[in-house]
Length: 77
Length: 138
Ligand code: SF4
Image (cartoon, rainbow over all chains, first blue to last red; front, side, top):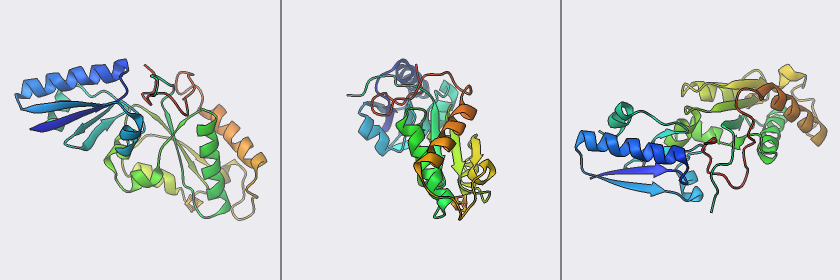
């Protein structure tokens, strides 16, 4: 099962990224677990200095921007 | 608990080299963070290809990069990951490598110059240094 982590404290950008990541994973039809990482200390431990961030299986794929669904699909596939 | 959202989308990096101008670059970067003008990042994280730092540098951000001299180590580090940046070289700003005292007056003057030259590249919402979710404003 893929672990998709949304790194952000819950601002509109983080919520948008969550929505797009769910859409991307659903369209791929994969089994996934979506985890929201909201504590700033934990976010910083990923080396993410600008949110929102997206990590897949613990590896940061994007930060400080909102990739589109197609790009997210490639990140989580 | 951090509040959302603290501010701007500027990240600052310094070469932090061993020379006086490298140390001044470092102090200036810290000053820009302390005054809320930019958020901190880590050049070593980018150089080490730590995914979070690379992703942050290549996000929708304004990277302010401060090098002590024209060897431009910080610029070259960020170029390796394809990051865009606003670049400053302290020896191009009148400092002499090996002959500049690392003192507050110099740091304040350089920080102010960088602040003025970097303003306008993003909406003016000062980055919070403590709270803020680091989202660059929402
Ligand atoms: S840019 Fe100049 S001062 Fe900075 S680390 Fe490189 S050689 Fe040293």
